[in-house]
Image (cartoon, helix red, strand yellow):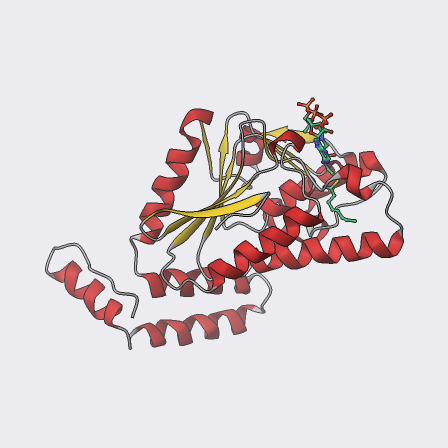
Length: 261
Ligand code: CO8
């Protein structure tokens, strides 16, 4: 499952790794990358056997250094609008993937790269990772969801500071602000991300998918609606094999054998 600039592989049982491969441009997002990402995400949507996805960029220097500035530079307003819509559409599709998505950020995650991180559920970063929304330095603003998603993740003041100054922060600061869940040495980033993916993929698959959807959707729902959705999903899981198996396994002091049904 590979195109010119994007590939996804089943790394091991139930774990997919989605890689942006445009290393000579620090994995910058042009229309081709976005188109290929869209196809890859479409394929993963149709895979009920997946338990977790890890997203990363090729090489050690960058996760994604933003939208492709050379491609954007000559654009007029309607082309730029279409480009923003294309990126937003692809990123929202990634955010809505039914399985959890872990970002493994090894280097620069700037502009569109930082916005891509914001569409992942859990973020692991190398101690060399750098985050930021530098668009105002280019005379523009974030266009792939940053003005809408960053404050939800790191709070209003910090988001304003990032977006209004265009400054960058390192992995430790991103961790302190809650964007990054764990900072690890660069050489162990991939194995740590896979280990986390393995742990998630070992849990009840229906429960994991339900939990992801509920936590994500609760951000945009009134509390009462979110609680009702949770209660409905909770009740629904009691009609599954995996609920009976998970609870029986606990009571019998043995590992659960989930079947995703
Ligand atoms: N676009 C295109 N090419 C890039 C990009 C980029 N975003 N980032 C790096 N490259 C290219 C460089 O041009 C260079 O190419 P070449 O070797 O041919 O000269 C190569 O990658 C390596 O880059 P550097 O030599 O600059 O590497 P350094 O290690 O010196 O610096 C940095 C690394 C700090 C990451 C630096 O490359 C940089 O600042 N990049 C740009 C970061 C940036 O401003 N990103 C935000 C872009 S805007 C954006 O993402 C908006 C998203 C919404 C769009 C809405 C649509 C309208």
